[in-house]
Length: 253
Image (cartoon, rainbow, N blue to C red; front, side):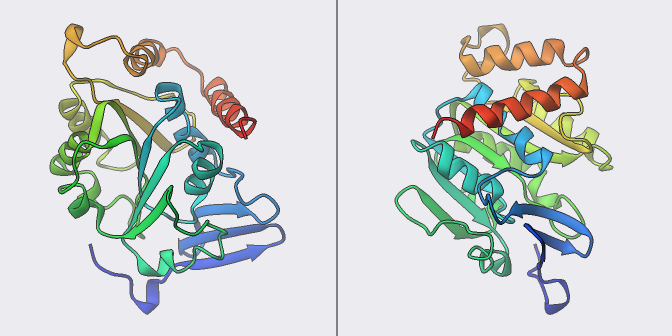
């Protein structure tokens, strides 16, 4: 993927208590409250935290895409037993970490300047939750939704690990992405209808075995239940679910 130029460097805008990150003027990638830097402002970020329904106590969370660090900060604060690794392609985005009050690297947190597609080809099965939230000015990069990339994601996950992928529902590649994930994860995928507007958050489970032989772990039980009920689920209640998940996690520490 090409590196950013001076013409498309990330933009930081501050208005009152809000600070946002934009790759294209007017298109908010991340948003933060200065008074509550760990608070999740955007609905899609709250929706992605629903991975805790599948994996309540992950040991290792790998994130693709730093942005303004909303998910990084929230997980760092409210999942204290988790080690967090963040892959970010853009050095200019990493350079903004202090403006978005992202904690410094330590024994639990590491932010790596790397191409996620290359990085995931080299790591062993060591990840419990893999959050894919990498976008550029044009949207979801092809390298982050290819069959090879999803195969590498599954290989990086431990048994019963969860991939969480953020993609726009109106993306012309949405149907092909859904098929690729289904093939890669043996159809162990689900989503919550309308939970984050145009952001479709897809959850895929790395079951050790396919089909009926798969062990009935918590992650698979939740996936099966959500997949069964998702045609009947209502967006309003799903958005409320995401808020409740975040509120419960916020009270843990």
